[in-house]
Length: 74
Image (cartoon, rainbow, N blue to C red):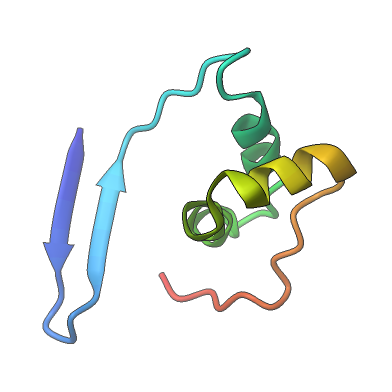
């Protein structure tokens, strides 16, 4: 299941189903599971922007992702 919708203001809304597997996606799973309630989209956007470098740093520090500076546009 996936859908891509472009709004009149140019915003792209992407809906998808994502399967993460233990062993292969451990760091990404930890980042997603640490997302605050109603903050999952922001965490996923930052992970996509930061790539593996952001995920590796999250794994090394073993702390929750800091998304306090992120906008919550959905």
